[in-house]
Length: 114
Image (cartoon, rainbow, N blue to C red; front, side, top):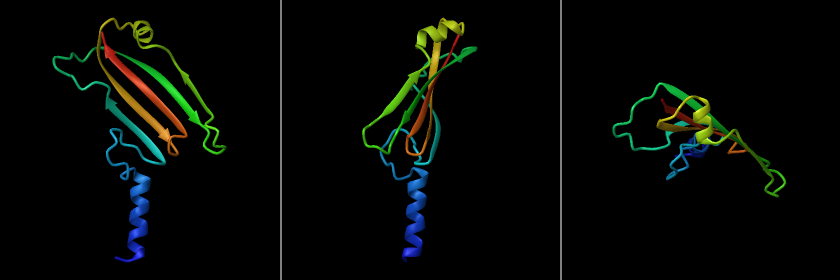
């Protein structure tokens, strides 16, 4: 195998997130948009007729090395579920959207219930 084959293969692995072996979240280095169950116990879980979304955003400044970051959250789970008319939570999902190795990341908790 020549260098012509190895360098493109290495680039594809790094940019696709395949190099993150062992992580529970599939994550690409340039872009990630993944929805995963927040809980895996689905025994006798009803689907629910209502849905509620909570967003948490994070921006991390990677240049200075001082670890400057800004985070803001859109509310609490029970308050948001109550506002959406959900009194009984059936299940939840977590959606993660990130760009540029996590410089910007949004995690969205999606709540389903009645």
